[in-house]
Image (cartoon, rainbow, N blue to C red; front, top):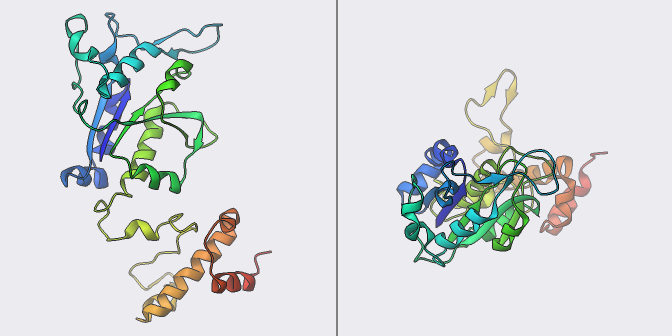
Length: 263
């Protein structure tokens, strides 16, 4: 998968994309990541990407011109980056995949569709994702014409779209086959089957009077599977009962839920 970001602070991605699972995914050739600097599509000496809002108000708004030019260049529609190079002191990478598959353009904004596991699974099927990250008070509304997807992480405000995009990228990339070390690992995580994941334990078997549940040390795989399923159901019923409405439940699941006394 090709994943690209367009923002005014591309250096923010260094630690996240250069560590752990994201680093390994790139080393395996599963993920091709590039963080582009929006300032490379500006033409004044201050490399301006924002301006005062029309109508007044606090803060600054991201300008639409550099966003349009950058997305069009990265998509292979135009070649501003190369044609206008003498007029702009470039510092970042030139578009690498302009002749490749058209990117699915993703904006991060409060008015977007709430992000969830199903959306991560769907985006993981895309060949190429381009995240356009806002900053300050937001993005000129006209730029949203470029969006194929507008995503919201939740009902709160972050300093920048870079932070939100990192969360989405992580959730999406781990869905790609071969990224996680354990085969099928993503299939047993929270939300993958509509439920919260069961509790996890490791050595020692006993610690400060707290023991690992007996089914997990029994060596009986059928008993382990049953315990994990029931724990997943109970944890979901206790902490996120709203998830049960859409979760695929068997008759045995429903019968077990009826035995719980959660008040």
